[in-house]
Each structure stands twice: as C-alpha cells, then as structure tokens.
Length: 103
Image 1 (tube, rainbow, N blue to C red):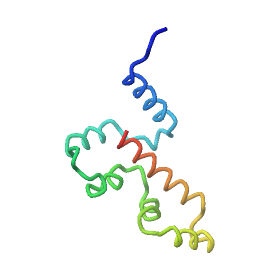
Image 2: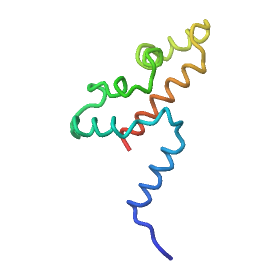
Image 3: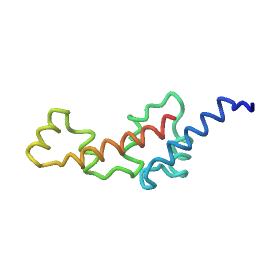
Image 4: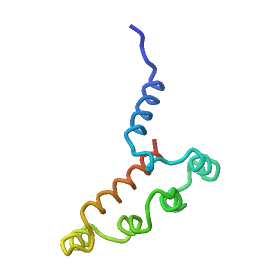
C-alpha cells in the first residue's frame, strides 16, 4: 500500500478547503504574496488590518463583524435593522479570510 506523507495530506486538505469557498471569498495570489512579503511570523494580522485590506468584506460587513457585540447584533436583528442572513454572511466571509491566512 502506498503511503501518503503528512505534507501531501496537508496540501490536499488545504486544496479541498479552498475549493469549498466561493470564488469571490478567496484571497488572491497577489494579495497573499504582498502579505507574505510585508509581514513576518511575529506580526499581528489584526494590527496590520489584513481583513480590512483584503477587499473581500464590504464596509457594512466590516462594521457588522467589528463594531457590534453579540447582544447588540441580536437586538439589531430583532428590530430588523440587520438581517440574520447579512450577519451570517459577514461572519462567514471573515472566517473564510482568517482560515486562508492561518492555514
């Protein structure tokens, strides 16, 4: 039986995770190269505003994921100022970007 190295398993898993994302939620190769060139392993991705700079989240989605507490989001949804769909998409996009940055 042919054994697969852990590196090959990791590469296959990364590829399958990336394939599961909508195309417009994927970080571009150019953006990743810029990040890799300008940020070392001790850098903080949050402090470097990587999520804001990647261009995947809209201004409204950034506001939803950065400015509200969970309680405030529940209130906004309950009062129909935000939809559950918009909130879910905003956090899903942010998680998709974070996953691409750390794996």
